[in-house]
Length: 75
Image (cartoon, rainbow, N blue to C red; front, side, top):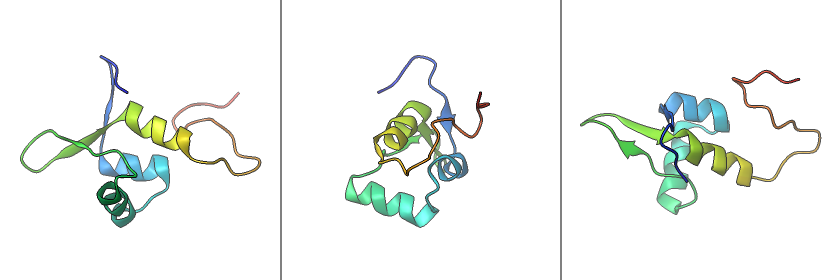
């Protein structure tokens, strides 16, 4: 799932959006249960925003949870 205007996210941004730690992200990638990043340079990777949104949307919701993203205003 990708668009021409897809934003690329750093690991820290992915951690913030998913609530997962670094070690959990990499463990889930090895398990095949989390999107793998794109290699953008020798030492840097980025995740597509659309892939992370799709992952979050695929997770079960807690009761009373909202659908607003942290960077979006609710209302």
